Length: 197
Length: 379
Image (tube, rainbow over all chains, first blue to last red; front, side, top):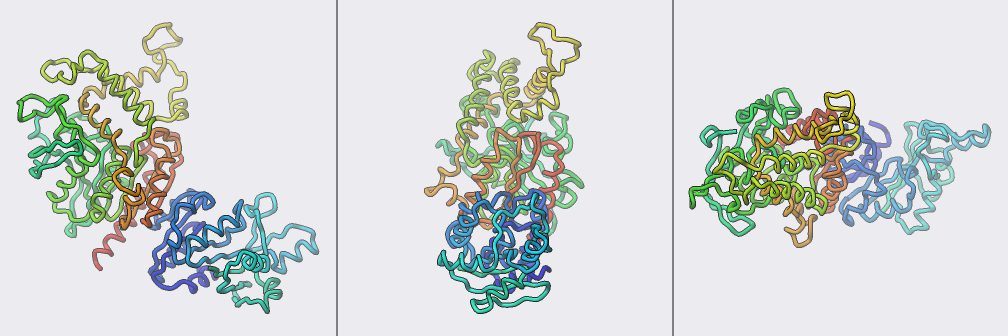
């Protein structure tokens, strides 16, 4: 399992009710069901992925999360997961509002634009960065709203969103992020995972 | 198309059925067919609901019409709904003309066919009648219910009336509420039948004549709505019918014309015009949301059934929009739902023809749910 999925899995208690927004081929949902006996739902844009999910017996609806989130009642899930998709929405702020409305807790992971390799790519080479967590080039990237761990941290503060936990990933190493080490971790983490409510 | 009831598998429903229209039916036949074998644990049963002009003969050769069953593409040994594995049941709907009580059945009070004295029936009446069949077959809980078009509407009604009776459900290309366009198209078909002088206010059973032309026109109109613009264009375009050039006549110059005429002609051989009137009316009256004070969301409240809603991208009769309304209601009520729109140019008919992506999807859904259902039974 991807290290990110392991971290997400550790944040979720057994038998929780979760919604995975942009669930891909359902591998996170499937491992959560097997390991934690959770009740899972998913939303996925790509038809091929939706079919893969259905063949695994997962309850996934085909659609664009920006249009689909309105149908879920308030606090109808214990956790809503948004794994590295926030930056691809036209209106991430609106999506986040919905996620916080639907879920008691929200887990958001972001590819960190403040990661040092990203910074050096622009600083020294003058090129848009291409890294493991940002594999696309500027002309075909689905990412419309890139941000850094620090940006998202401050965004949560501005919006009065409570940050329960932040975890940074660099290669296979994981570390906890707080106000004190934020500057450093913003430089050293490739991906940031936020547990917010 | 002559047959007697004793040639057809059926049960007699003894329990009085109070219809939505206020009349009560009792001691009436419900015809059905089964395929495959019910296993010992009785957990491999699938109930299929047929569409407006379907019947209980889902697959193999229909013994009455001698034609292939209407869902032979999906149901059979080794097929998506594999009868080597599953026990498939399908009943002819109440109001139909393949053995179940319908307008052409003999009214015991008058000893004549019902004709227009047949009571008005609804989708709910059809479903309540079919539930008796499960008792008869000794099935407590189905693995799944499947249905396209009107079959999907019966399925939705079944799942709201009997939420505990099916582990999973696949409503295909259907709606929870017949809309103005859908009613309008049905009205067009009914008016075509009733405009035929041989319809005789529904009393055509005594003579050898029946409203053949009207019923054929109704079928032609229906057929157009089952296909998509691009599907029609690709298959027929402006191709001419067995001729080199247009002939300035009203005979079929174009292939699409001869195709529609053919569809009309074969249909009247197997279907009763009054059944078409009554069943299409039942469709128009279908509005699941009206059965619940708080609408469709309430319809599925606390429903544990695992749903897979399927629509087809080029279906304009029951478009994706209609399926999405069902998905939204299911999600709003916290039900368990998957949804896929199959990209195809085959229109509404896509669920009846060989559409590999669609067949693969229902196969994988059924197979994975069978495993889950077996585990549920063990607990």
